[in-house]
Length: 540
Image (cartoon, rainbow, N blue to C red; front, side, top):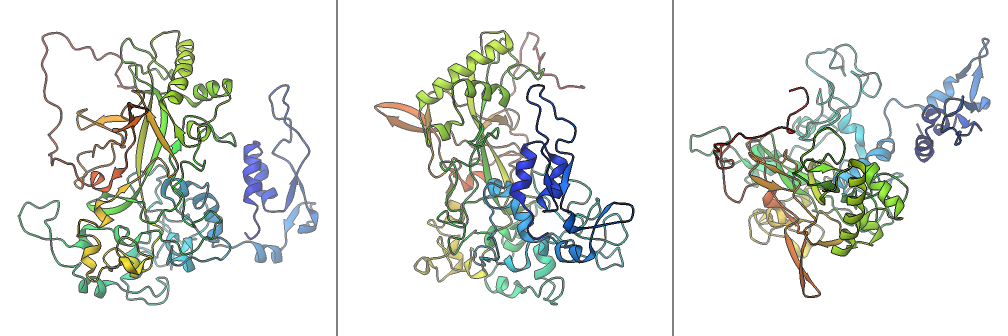
C-alpha cells in the first residue's frame, strides 16, 4: 500500500511489538503507552498487542466494530505490490539481496534502465506466475483452481526461481515461474510477455547457436551444444551497470559486502554487513561465474568472516553443541560477551578497514579466555575462517548493447574500450569475462595475520582445503571446486604475514587439474583400531 512506513515497522519489530506492526506502519493506528517491564524482563499486558486506532479512517458498525471503507480499500490496497515494497527487504542498503548479490532498485520512480532494463515492469513482471497448460484459468495455482498471483495463503505467492542455495524452498517455488525465455521467445505478443524482443536472430548472427562443445552427458567426442545451450542468460547480460548516482553514495549499485561476524554492527545487530570498509562501492562486473544444472551463470560470492575453535585433541566442545573435535563456530553470544567487556564491535569497523595481526591476536587471547572459562578446559585454539557462498545473480540486466559479446568490452560505459569483433569481449587474454578476479573482503578493507586463519572446510573426500561452500561445484555437479582466498603474503615492517587475495573467476568454474569423481584422498591402512568416537551424527 502507498505510504506504508517500513522504517516504523522495523522499529516496532526491534522492540518486540510484532502484532502492532501492521496497523501502525500502515497509518491506521498508533502505539499505546504500555512500556516494557525492565525490572521483571517481561512484556506487560497490551505490550505490542494493542494499539490506538484512528477512528477517522474507519466505519463503526452497529456491532461497534471497526471496518475500513470501500473507498479507502480502493485507494490504498493493491493486489499487485509496488516494487518499492519488495525493495525494502530485498534491494538497496541494508536489504538481503543487496548483501548477497549487490542488487539495487532505483527508488521513487527514478528508473535506471541502464542498470536494469526491466525497471518498467517491476518485480512482479517476472515474479508473478505465468499461466499453466494444466489449468483453464488465466493464472492458476500449483495446487489447482483459480490463482491469485499476489495473495496469501500458500498456492498464491509470488514465484521464486531455482538456485544452488535455497533456504526458503516450498511447493510453490519454481511452479509456473517465469524465465527469460517465457517472454523473449514468445515472439512478443504484447500481453503477459510485455512484447519482449526475440534475441534469436542476434544470437545466431553472433555465432552463439553454433555447436562448439560436447554436452556434459555425452562421450561421443562430437560437438553437440552451443553457447546458448551451456550458458544462462545472466552470464552475458547481468553486468549491473548504473548510469547516475541515485542513492547519494557515489554510485547507484554498491553492495555485496563481506559479512563481518566478529562482532555486532553500530546498531547492535549480531553481525556487521554495513560498515563502509567492507562494501563494494561499484558492482559493475563484480560478479563471478559458476555452474548450476549444466549451465554457466553469474554468481555473487558472499564472504562471511567468523571465529571458530580448531582444537582437535583433546576434545573441546567450544559452542556446546554436543559435537567436539575442532572447527566449532563460536556462538555470537560468546563473541559479543567478550566484545561488550572490551567495548568492541566488529574487527573491520573498530579498525577502520585496516586489521593487523596484532589486532587479531588481541581478540584471540580474550576469546580463548572466555571459551576456556565456558567449557572448563584450557586448550582452546581460536581461529578466523572465511566462508564463501555463491548466490545466483539474475538481476541488474543491462541493455543488450552492453552485454558480453556485443563488443562493449571490459568497460561497457566506455566506447574507447569497445571491440569491433564481439567475440573478443570474452575470447582474448585481456578480457575480464573469464580472466578477471573478484574481491571478497570489501573495497576499503585490508587484513593480515600470523597463523590465525584456517580454511573453512575440506572437500572431495576431505582431501582439499577450501574457503568455498562445498556446494560450489564443477559443471558436472559432482566435485566441489576447492579455492582459497586466505593464502596471500604481505611484508609489513620487514616481517612476512599472511593476507587475503582476490577470487579468480576461473577458480569457480574449473579445477586447475581436471579430476574425476573418484580422485579423492590417497588410501591409508593401519594395524591399530581407528577411533571415530565423537564424530557420529545425531540419530545415526
